[in-house]
Length: 158
Ligand code: ZN
Image 1 (cartoon, rainbow, N blue to C red):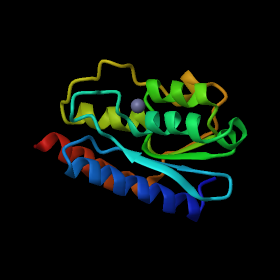
Image 2 (cartoon, helix red, strand yellow):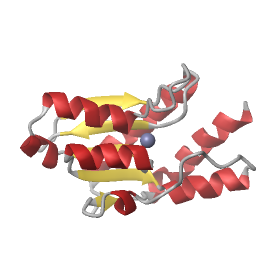
Image 3 (cartoon, rainbow, N blue to C red):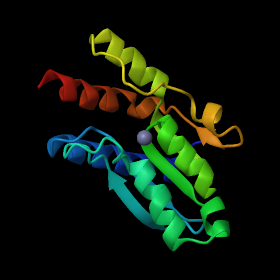
Image 4 (cartoon, rainbow, N blue to C red):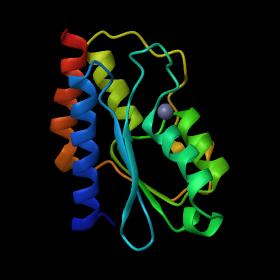
Protein backbone atom coordinates (compact mmCIF):
# COMPACT_ATOMS: atom_id res chain seq x y z
CA UNK A 1 0.00 0.00 0.00
CA UNK A 2 1.14 3.52 -0.85
CA UNK A 3 0.83 5.95 2.10
CA UNK A 4 1.43 9.68 2.57
CA UNK A 5 5.11 9.14 3.39
CA UNK A 6 5.53 7.21 0.14
CA UNK A 7 3.92 10.09 -1.73
CA UNK A 8 6.34 12.60 -0.18
CA UNK A 9 9.31 10.57 -1.44
CA UNK A 10 7.72 9.99 -4.84
CA UNK A 11 7.08 13.72 -5.20
CA UNK A 12 10.79 14.30 -4.55
CA UNK A 13 11.52 11.80 -7.36
CA UNK A 14 9.30 13.82 -9.69
CA UNK A 15 11.16 17.00 -8.66
CA UNK A 16 14.47 15.33 -9.44
CA UNK A 17 13.07 14.20 -12.80
CA UNK A 18 12.08 17.80 -13.56
CA UNK A 19 15.55 18.99 -12.56
CA UNK A 20 17.11 16.41 -14.89
CA UNK A 21 14.92 17.48 -17.80
CA UNK A 22 15.69 21.14 -17.22
CA UNK A 23 19.41 20.32 -17.27
CA UNK A 24 19.19 18.48 -20.60
CA UNK A 25 18.93 14.94 -19.21
CA UNK A 26 15.97 12.57 -19.25
CA UNK A 27 13.17 13.05 -16.69
CA UNK A 28 13.90 10.34 -14.15
CA UNK A 29 14.68 10.72 -10.45
CA UNK A 30 15.08 8.29 -7.53
CA UNK A 31 15.46 8.36 -3.76
CA UNK A 32 16.83 5.74 -1.34
CA UNK A 33 15.18 5.70 2.09
CA UNK A 34 16.41 3.56 4.97
CA UNK A 35 14.39 1.52 7.48
CA UNK A 36 14.21 4.53 9.80
CA UNK A 37 12.64 6.69 7.11
CA UNK A 38 15.77 8.75 6.47
CA UNK A 39 16.71 9.70 2.90
CA UNK A 40 20.21 8.31 2.42
CA UNK A 41 20.87 9.03 -1.25
CA UNK A 42 19.12 10.55 -4.21
CA UNK A 43 20.02 11.10 -7.82
CA UNK A 44 18.54 11.77 -11.22
CA UNK A 45 19.22 10.79 -14.79
CA UNK A 46 22.57 12.04 -16.15
CA UNK A 47 22.83 10.59 -19.67
CA UNK A 48 23.36 13.79 -21.63
CA UNK A 49 27.15 13.31 -21.58
CA UNK A 50 26.74 10.15 -23.67
CA UNK A 51 26.82 7.43 -20.98
CA UNK A 52 23.37 5.86 -21.32
CA UNK A 53 23.89 3.81 -18.16
CA UNK A 54 23.72 6.89 -15.89
CA UNK A 55 20.30 6.02 -14.48
CA UNK A 56 19.53 7.07 -10.89
CA UNK A 57 18.43 3.57 -9.82
CA UNK A 58 21.79 2.19 -10.98
CA UNK A 59 23.61 4.91 -8.99
CA UNK A 60 21.53 4.01 -5.93
CA UNK A 61 22.47 0.33 -6.24
CA UNK A 62 26.17 1.22 -6.50
CA UNK A 63 26.02 3.73 -3.65
CA UNK A 64 24.22 1.25 -1.42
CA UNK A 65 26.79 -1.47 -2.09
CA UNK A 66 29.49 0.79 -0.67
CA UNK A 67 27.64 2.57 2.11
CA UNK A 68 25.05 0.14 3.51
CA UNK A 69 25.23 -3.33 4.98
CA UNK A 70 23.29 -6.15 3.34
CA UNK A 71 20.68 -5.94 6.11
CA UNK A 72 20.34 -2.17 5.68
CA UNK A 73 19.90 -2.58 1.93
CA UNK A 74 17.22 -5.23 2.35
CA UNK A 75 15.30 -3.01 4.78
CA UNK A 76 15.46 0.08 2.57
CA UNK A 77 13.00 1.40 0.01
CA UNK A 78 13.86 2.76 -3.42
CA UNK A 79 11.42 5.36 -4.73
CA UNK A 80 11.58 6.25 -8.38
CA UNK A 81 9.69 8.38 -10.87
CA UNK A 82 9.68 5.61 -13.49
CA UNK A 83 9.82 1.85 -13.07
CA UNK A 84 13.36 0.45 -13.21
CA UNK A 85 14.69 -0.61 -16.63
CA UNK A 86 16.10 -4.17 -16.83
CA UNK A 87 19.65 -2.91 -16.15
CA UNK A 88 18.58 -1.12 -12.98
CA UNK A 89 16.29 -3.97 -11.91
CA UNK A 90 19.28 -6.31 -12.15
CA UNK A 91 21.51 -3.93 -10.18
CA UNK A 92 18.76 -3.68 -7.55
CA UNK A 93 18.49 -7.45 -7.38
CA UNK A 94 22.24 -8.07 -7.26
CA UNK A 95 22.72 -5.58 -4.41
CA UNK A 96 19.78 -7.00 -2.44
CA UNK A 97 17.89 -3.74 -2.04
CA UNK A 98 14.36 -3.84 -0.60
CA UNK A 99 10.97 -2.51 -1.61
CA UNK A 100 10.52 -0.46 -4.79
CA UNK A 101 7.82 2.17 -5.25
CA UNK A 102 7.49 3.80 -8.66
CA UNK A 103 5.25 6.60 -9.95
CA UNK A 104 4.76 5.38 -13.52
CA UNK A 105 5.35 1.96 -15.04
CA UNK A 106 7.55 1.02 -17.99
CA UNK A 107 4.45 -0.07 -19.87
CA UNK A 108 2.81 3.34 -19.33
CA UNK A 109 5.95 5.05 -20.64
CA UNK A 110 6.00 2.68 -23.60
CA UNK A 111 2.41 3.58 -24.44
CA UNK A 112 3.21 7.29 -24.29
CA UNK A 113 6.25 6.91 -26.54
CA UNK A 114 4.15 4.96 -29.05
CA UNK A 115 1.47 7.66 -28.88
CA UNK A 116 4.11 10.30 -29.70
CA UNK A 117 5.74 8.23 -32.45
CA UNK A 118 9.03 7.92 -30.56
CA UNK A 119 11.12 4.90 -31.63
CA UNK A 120 11.57 2.04 -29.22
CA UNK A 121 14.64 1.80 -26.98
CA UNK A 122 17.46 -0.72 -27.66
CA UNK A 123 16.69 -2.46 -24.34
CA UNK A 124 13.52 -4.47 -23.83
CA UNK A 125 10.89 -3.02 -21.53
CA UNK A 126 10.27 -5.61 -18.80
CA UNK A 127 8.46 -5.40 -15.49
CA UNK A 128 10.91 -5.37 -12.56
CA UNK A 129 9.58 -8.72 -11.36
CA UNK A 130 10.49 -10.32 -14.70
CA UNK A 131 14.13 -9.51 -13.87
CA UNK A 132 13.96 -9.86 -10.06
CA UNK A 133 11.15 -12.34 -9.34
CA UNK A 134 11.29 -11.79 -5.57
CA UNK A 135 11.17 -8.00 -5.67
CA UNK A 136 8.49 -6.21 -3.66
CA UNK A 137 7.18 -3.62 -6.09
CA UNK A 138 4.40 -1.04 -5.81
CA UNK A 139 3.11 1.33 -8.48
CA UNK A 140 1.97 3.00 -10.58
CA UNK A 141 0.59 5.90 -8.56
CA UNK A 142 -2.19 7.63 -10.46
CA UNK A 143 -1.78 11.00 -8.68
CA UNK A 144 1.59 11.49 -10.34
CA UNK A 145 0.82 10.15 -13.79
CA UNK A 146 -0.22 13.44 -15.40
CA UNK A 147 2.83 15.30 -14.19
CA UNK A 148 5.23 12.58 -15.32
CA UNK A 149 3.54 12.32 -18.70
CA UNK A 150 3.95 16.06 -19.24
CA UNK A 151 7.66 15.88 -18.30
CA UNK A 152 8.23 13.08 -20.80
CA UNK A 153 6.26 14.92 -23.45
CA UNK A 154 8.48 17.99 -22.97
CA UNK A 155 11.54 15.81 -23.47
CA UNK A 156 10.40 14.89 -26.99
CA UNK A 157 8.91 18.21 -28.01
CA UNK A 158 12.26 20.01 -28.07
ZN1 ZN B 1 17.67 2.04 -15.68
